[in-house]
Length: 332
Ligand code: KG4
Ligand code: ZN
View (cartoon, rainbow, N blue to C red):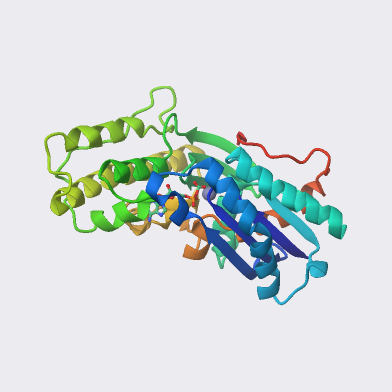
């Protein structure tokens, strides 16, 4: 079964063709980073306009690169949430229009679940369920228990900022570009992680929840009276922030694994692209088998949408075109 995946939840317009939930035939991603960079974050109205301009072209390119035609597509899978409402509507309505015109079935796919599916797609070995799922992106930070594909239980989530958002805000406070995650990671490589004693928040109600807004404020206080353009200062602050954030992720994953008896962790979302994160888990959580997405699948893409869409179709069948809609927030 050849699935056309469509992704437009935030600031990437993407389309991919995937066979049987596993084999990538093509992957096209049109990033809008250039558009939002100067604002230090995504501007929804600008994102909508760009999605509209490029979405058909991106789909056409994905079909061409797979050396297929639209007639060869058996199913259309679209990320219908969570995300920004305008961008979501563009993807969902493009998918519905194509489905109607071509007489093909369509399914809606949860973008956050798809990030975890990217780790499954990237693994050469079968996954020994149950496993933990750690989603660490610009919009989400959560730990879930994954019983099987499509069966999840939420164990902990952020009570304020997502970690990617915190990375982006720290970079912005230092006057650096968007997205801040990769920039902070690079700076941290040459910094002293012990110079600033920073810590992520503790959540009394659920010790497996996350809180990064206090950490962000602590970074702001650490900047007071300092020359924030000094390269060594920037490196030390980035390293101290990153150490605090990643230590928190590792500790909570280990605790969640102990409590649930899980031995493996699926990682999903842009922050899991961070090599310091990967190294810290490999070094400090040796008891856990870590499944990371390949670099090509860790940022927003439509391959993971097409891949998970295949399974959604197998278990739930096609969506009803009359009710399939954009959903900005979807609980796990
Ligand atoms: O998953 P994603 O592409 O989009 C969302 O669904 O949110 O994640 C984007 C986020 C941004 O906040 C970006 O700064 C962060 O992932 N990110 C990173 C790295 N690469 C991307 N954060 C830390 N280290 C990185 N190398
Ligand atoms: Zn994402």
